[in-house]
Length: 618
Image 1 (cartoon, helix red, strand yellow):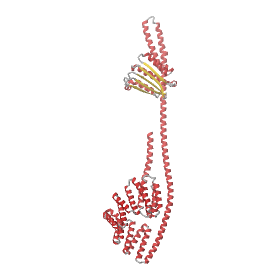
Image 2 (spheres, one colour):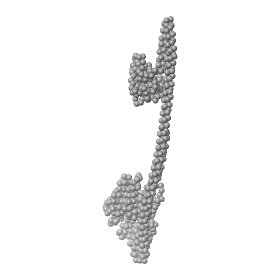
Image 3 (tube, helix red, strand yellow):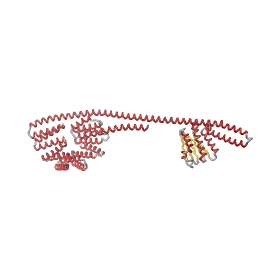
Image 4 (cartoon, helix red, strand yellow):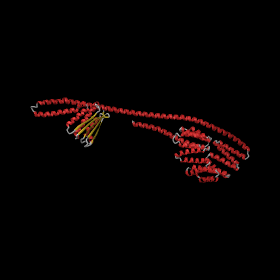
């Protein structure tokens, strides 16, 4: 029964745990996929982020808190692109407050710290930017994420560059180049380094670095990473007024971006080539590239970039002295300016709407979390109720088992008492018959024989001796069957037994020690009878077999038990005899004591005497 209850309980708990684990694993896997999608969208413009934000409303099978974390992070990214840096930081902090409740959320918090650092960097608040980069670095150090630490050091190099500490920025990048094995990060470091050199008038060094990287990786799969370096060369040659070379390298960058379908880079290169062609006086080609760039930007709905393209087209028209075209373009510019203002207004409205929806979703999340908590409490209640029922069944079973044992013991004790009482009554009946009938008849026979004593004295004397012996034996048997001494109490009976044994046996001395603490009168008759009979049997065995000189009998009350100890200094015996026919008497004694819930302890060795300890409950 115990094992069955335990197995049921274990199965039930395992079932609940497995359900929770399975759900948790599924949610974690889905969340990781969702976070990867977010990282891709985070590289794009505001409208792409807004599209992803709307997509979050359709997400299922992910913990609402996880979804809310990504929602807050996307809001922070959108606000960053709107230059609302304080609001963006607030969203990052709210996102971190959500994810810190979950295990393994430290890396996500660290990535958001990098976003907060970028907000401060764009406002030129360098100390705060450094502070949050360092917080992110500490987390990644603890997580032993070397790649993330290298990325943070790259961000520090950028930060030093924007701060104006060029030497420190170059020092960090040189250390990173030697330390990191991440090729993607190495490309980013080389690109930043070339930008730093070019923007600080070190054009030849920048050109040499760009050409070194292009020469080293101008084959295989790494060729797709060379677009920024061709773009750098184009900028450098533009500064040197070498427009043919500038156009050549810008076109190389453009071709690579076409292969990789990087829409933002394609548009940027088209605009850059248009500006170079305008400097070269090739206005028709410049216009063609600008219109191509406008078409590319329209795919992404990027009004800001389209507006800047129309401004460049107007500049080309002015350089051609084509004022009619310039007038038309100015109308287009005005139209786009209005669209941009409307778009800006729509974005602001959208952000306000997002704030409202966020509050609404937060309220829904709170309700959902309360429901989940209620369900958890309900499950806990079911589990506790189940455990209580099992415990109740267990204790009820133990109670029934104990009650059954008690009833069985009571029945056995009652039967044993009945057997003892019946045996004692039969002994009394036989003893009475021997005393009142047989013994009396023997006495009459002895009286009649006395009449013949004068006629045949010798024969009569012999018969009298035989009759006397028979009368003594009958009295002895009658006495053994019925212990009349017990009528005066156990101690009186044991005292008389010791006196009789001392009188009969001149070579063996019997001693009695007792301390019943006033419990003698409350002893049950069965108990006193069994103790007396056991003492008789053990002392008789000592007389017959021990060959000792002293037999000590002790009777005492200890902790609601009567303890009888009988020991002699005789020859002892081998306890293996208990397994043979010679041990039947001892086994019978043990059985008699067991009938009244007692037990016997026997200590003996050959040549070292015998000690019996008999313990019987009161």
